[in-house]
Amino acid sequence: MQNRDRTLSRDVVAHQIPSGDKHTLTSGETVMIHQVLGGSYTVQTGYGLFRINGADADALGEEVQAATVATPAAATDAPPESEAVWDQLRQVFDPEIPVNIVDLGLIYSMDISQRDDGGHKVDVAMTLTAPGCGMGPVIAEDAKSKILLVPGVAAADVRITWEPPWNQSMISEEGKMKLGLI
Image 1 (spheres, one colour):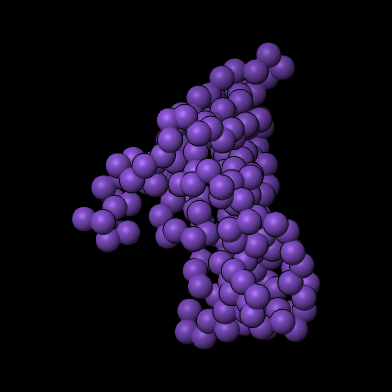
Image 2 (tube, rainbow, N blue to C red):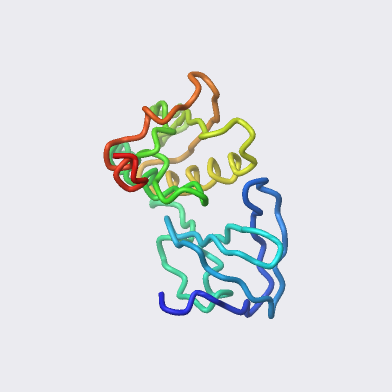
C-alpha cells in the first residue's frame, strides 16, 4: 500500500482504540491507514485511532475482500474441523498489536460440541493483554463472526476471562519473533 492517506467516500462506523467506543467517521474525512490485519483496518484521524471493519473497506477506496464479509457457512451435519476453527481465530487481531490472538496466547480454550437441535457449537475462552482494554468486546465479536464461517458451525460463543492473567510468556515463538522479543 503506497499512499496510506485516504479520504472516506462515505460515513463509516468505527471503534475507537483502545476504548472500543463506536464513532461515525464522516464522508470526506481524511484518515491514515496504519495497518491492515485480519481484514480490518487500523486508521488514524486528527482525534485518535480507530478500527474499521473490512466489510467497510470500500469507504477507504479499498476492495472489500469476500473473506471479510460475514456470510454464514453452509449448513452441514458434519462436525467442523478443529484446525479450520483455529485458522479462523488466527485471522483475528488486536488492532494495536500486529500478532493474531492465537499467537498472542489470548485463546485459553476452544471446544466443539454437538447441539441438541443439530449442528455444532464452538465455545472459546479468551483473555486480553490488559483488563482495561475496551476493545475486548470488539475482538470477541470479530472472533465469533469468523468462527461462524467454518462449515458445520451453527453457533459460537466467545467468552472473555481474566483467569489466569495473561503474560508475555504465553506468546508463541512466532508471535515473539514478530514483536521483536527474541
